[in-house]
Amino acid sequence: MRIHRINTKTTEWNQGEVDLTLLDPLIKKYRDKKGNMIPLLQGTQELFGYLPRKAFEKISSETGLELSAMFGVATFYAQFRLNPVGKHIIKVCHGTACHVQNAKEITEALEEGLKVKDGETTEDRLFTLESVACLGCCSLAPVMMVSEQTYGKLTGNEAVKIVKTIRIAENN
Ligand code: FES
Image (tube, rainbow, N blue to C red; front, top):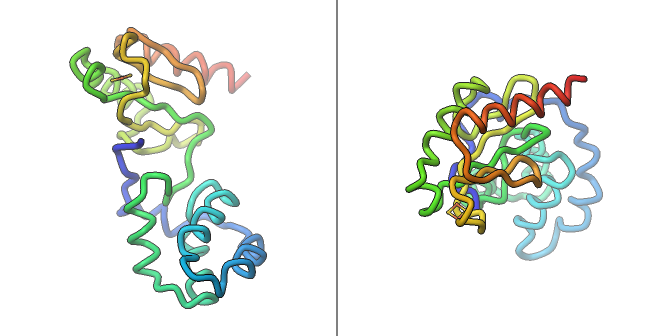
C-alpha cells in the first residue's frame, strides 16, 4: 500500500501528449455498464501507466461520468496515479520496524541524491521516489525496494549509492 499520494497540485497532471484513440475500445466496453468508473480508470492506467487529464476529459464526455467524481475516486485509491512514473519505482518502507530503524534518513538521503521530493519523479524519468507501508521483510529494516529488488539494513548513503549505480548502468 502506498502511503504517499502524488501531489495533484503539480501542473504535470495537465500535460503530456497521449494517444486518446487507445481509449476507444475501453470506453465502448464500459460505456453503458453500471459501476463502470473503476474499470475505466484501471483500464486507462493500464494503457498509459497513469491517468492523464485528457483521458479523464474524453471518458467524461463520452460516458457522462462526472470529472469531479472520477478525480475523487482516482485520488482516494492508492492504486491510481495522476502523473507518469519513472522507469524504476523506489519504495522506501516507513512501516513500524523501518521507522524505528530510521527510514526517514533513507528518504531524506534519496531526496537529496535524486533532487526530488517524496512522491516525485526525476527529470530523466528514471526514478520515482515513494514512501510505503510495510514491505513484509521487517527483519531487514530499514528496507527499500527498487523495481522488484529488495535492499535491507540500509543507511542513507548506501541507498543513494545503490540508486546511482542503477543510473550509471541505465546510461551505459
Ligand atoms: S516495517 Fe519495513 S519491511 Fe516491515
